[in-house]
Image (cartoon, rainbow, N blue to C red; front, side):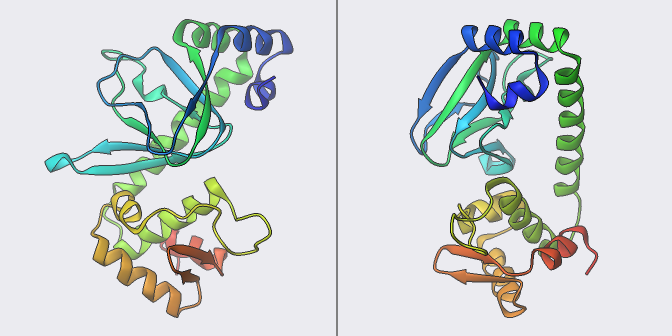
Length: 219
């Protein structure tokens, strides 16, 4: 039984969804769906890490969300012309549960707790998207990306500070809406302040409280 579904749906409905769903495996770098694809359903991550991207001017990729085990993706294809307005790309080998649109709709209608969760989920995602699109100083935006990286992917097993998966500097710049060189400078500043520690491509979070304060502009 899917761990995520069991939180919000009755056992009978969990069995119903599982029976009508499909488990699909992807390799790192595989496109799960892309902008313009017809919406056929939603996905729940069983294992692995995925980035959700959109394209801004000059076809530049912009990361708008990171997702991992038990997270939902594909919901941005709901409504309108029923096509995905974003793309989803595997950051590492991943396994996803694909739930056809008709089955998902039936499940939401029959399970009020699931419907309430989805409503709050949409609200929180919209709030975070608006915040990242605001005119905050780049230091705050980079801190926000690092904090979200930590919240979504957590720390490496056996380490108290090292991120389990560190976004590339290019991906950090994409999500923060800034340049690669600017990210390198901000990371160097945070490193000097002992908020993070860079170790090659890896990043250690030394002071998560301070990082969150910078994210919120409260430093």
